[in-house]
Amino acid sequence: MGAGAADPDLGWQPPSRLGWVAPHVAAEFPGLGISWVEVDGRAGRSPDPVRRRLRDLSDRFYGAHAIHMRERPIPWAYRVFFRQIGLDPDHTRTPVEQLALDRLHDGGFKARGMPADALTIATVETGIALRAFDADRLQGALCIRDTAPGESLPGRPAELARGTLVIADERTPIGLLFGATAEGRGVEKGTRRIAIAAVQVDGVPQIAVEEALWMVAAALETA
Amino acid sequence: MPDLLDRDTHAAIGVGGDERLARAELRRQIGRLELQLSELVAEAFPRVRIDASVPAVSRRPRALGLGELEAVRDSLATRIGDARRQLDERSELETRNRELLERMLDAPADYKWLQISRDDIGAPGCGHWHSRPRYGVLGMLMGWWRVRISSGCPLPGRLAAVEREKSEEARPARRAATGPVGFVSAC
Image 1 (cartoon, each protein chain N blue to C red):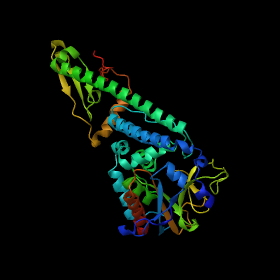
Image 2 (tube, helix red, strand yellow; image 1 turned 30 degrees about the vertical axis):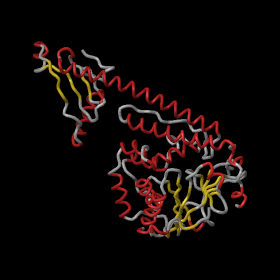
Image 3 (cartoon, helix red, strand yellow; image 1 turned 45 degrees about the vertical axis):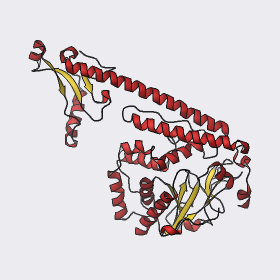
Image 4 (tube, helix red, strand yellow; image 1 turned 90 degrees about the horizontal axis):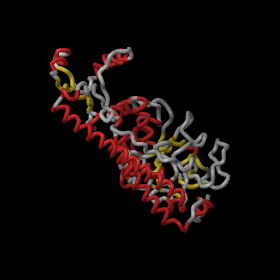
């Protein structure tokens, strides 16, 4: 429940922190979790090593990969979770499948700047669903919970239906789980410190989450 | 925030708490069915396009109730049934095409101008078998028929030529009968 270092023995820097999941949500979805790391970084053009890595990734990713991806344990776990929360993964794509689709559509993983490119690399390599937030605008630990009546995403006037699953800090929801990010909470021009969050679902090993977070952090540090 | 932590009733997320085991079982079934459907989609690719889409029961992520989970499970089961039927039909067609190909190879003159592609028999890659007369018109008159095997997929360097062929195909011209068996026609 409490936020803290996930597993300092791995020795990866910076160490990730475990967020919490509301108990009644955790009871419904065992295995659901959120971990995050905070790194210094800002939005901007990706450095050459990152752009090169995107190109390499594009060269070894084909249509057959996209089709067979859904049979692999981690992408499959996210598909199943999408079904379980009422979404159709063939319509609202899981993060890794959306990237695969974009790759096929665009003919390559297009460079979109940091931190998007770092997230793309880590998501395609590991299959983990990742989000980026402005760390300086977060308050306390991240969590996954359902919304209470009358809650909405900051900057979006529409009230969220009660029971909507969201990523939140200790004050407000900062984004839908696998959906839109609240206004001003994403990485923008003025961002100086970035929080990378990984949403873990049942069937996704913690080591894969750690690897994904480490990959993004390493890429951001090269920028 | 404390009130969010303290909410321990399942009514808070709109699902009945006493049905938790049933919902867990349904989620397990959904996971298993999703895997089966994924395997069928992968198995069918690229021969058959399987529609794996199951209508979303919600526009926002949330915990589903028993009835909604049952609806998702039932939709997945229906999709799997449809996918299996599509695959079986395709496999039967490919088997018939393979048998037709064997007969054509044994007696090309009995299947004049018939063309069977690798796709028609469920084989990967490009290429086709085509029953054609040897030496053109002379072969037609003499009944010298043979099966020609195409050289496979075009190389990347020949794509420009393919484009030219396509534009030429757009013009009205006399063409040999082609097409998948099952829909195969011989002239």
